[in-house]
Length: 263
Image 1 (cartoon, rainbow, N blue to C red):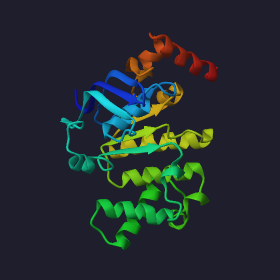
Image 2: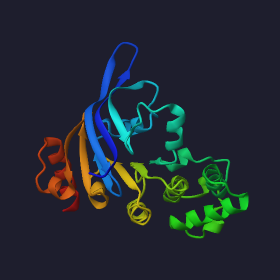
Image 3: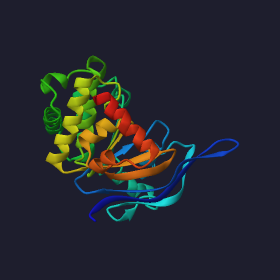
Image 4: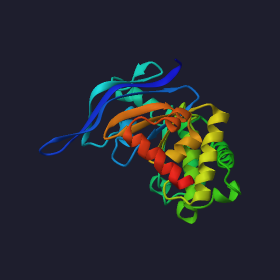
């Protein structure tokens, strides 16, 4: 099975002053090379915390208590921090909802993307600026030479999300983790972002984990899906199988909700 990423028996808990709360309970999943995999579930089901554990960027109150996470055959949970740092943000990258929270309001868009390019490549400021403009063009931003001079607050949420995608593409990643990247966007912009991720994945050949609470979005983008409920994977399979014959009650509820919206 040509797996790029494989998670085995992962358990994560949150530690409070008086008790420990399980967040993820013994889940296993795999992502093959050059595929888009979905993780779907309601808020609090453990989707995000699972993917944050991959590169060990969990909040301070969360801790992996068991499991293995293999990337290119190496267990990331046992990898020295310095070695993992070369993978985090380079080979494995994230895009989240509310892109403006992750962009520097004091720097122009062009300066921020060029700065990221300089971190990954040996090139001059002029070359970095040119590469930044090309990346903005690649993510289908109109007039990239003008947008380079804008600040994030001058742009729409959808445009800022495209800029975040340009940021993460600077390093030509092998795995993109997209956590609710279309949340709070209007339907037209949502469609544009989904198409952009889909087309870039086909063009560049990276693998992708797409996280959502909306099974309809997962269906439009992914080949396979893992359904999470209360910290566990309760069902997995090809999208056609999941929609044709959902087994777990939570999966059935997600499918029925999608069908009601599309009637």
